[in-house]
Amino acid sequence: MSGQTYTGDVQVGGPAEVRELPGLTIRKLAVGEMANNAYLLTDTATGEALLVDAAAEPEALLGLVDGAVVRTVVTTHGHWDHHRALPQVVAATGADTVAHPADAADLPVPVTRPVQHGDTVAVGEQVLEVVHLRGHTPGSIALVWRGPAGAGTHVFTGDSLFPGGVGNTQQDAARFASLLDDVETRLFGTLPDDTWVYPGHGRDTTLGAERPHLAEWRARGW
Image 1 (cartoon, rainbow, N blue to C red):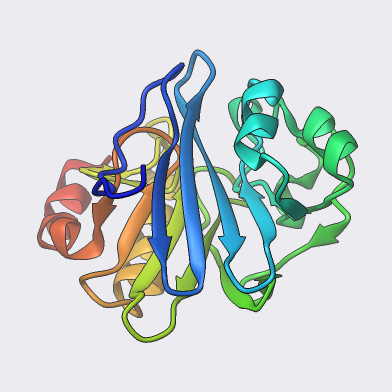
Image 2: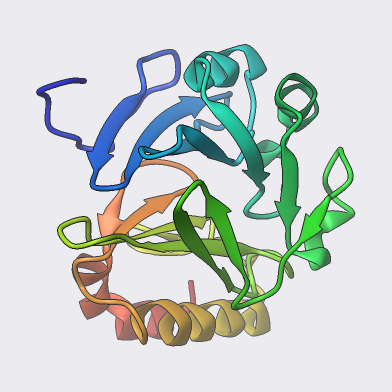
């Protein structure tokens, strides 16, 4: 990807997209029949790395790691398609496993570091903030990275926020209201419009692109 512009568009079986930012390199790869996005975040100063969602295809994910020192694997939520490769990745790397306690029982390996809203997770010298977004699952989390000057703000949202709406709440009005309330308050209410959104499936977006549609989403109920 050297010299190419990051778009965030990846296909299962295709190469990773690589985004080099001041302090952090982000690699995005699509895996599995659900076309899950996995993200490898590497601190440029130390070479330490963190994987977001060991979703499927452990060989592909370990190829993405390619020698980086993976200290941590964060699982954004407990749905099966987001953690099937977790046992193999943890066995190969010895990484700590991070998830919210409300979803921990759904994971195929023990969670060695449970996290709550407002906690932080380090990757080398970089710090990610945990944002609990209740609704898609009880323990869904996002990770916010506020980079150094010139790097911008970046959020890894799992299945809680996508281009065009929030995650699936199975037509449960209470779950939908909870998720949209949390997304509106804890993401749109605290982060700038140029915040880049990296979802659990599909293309990336920005908060600015989605913000005008919040009232529309609430009115339609999904």
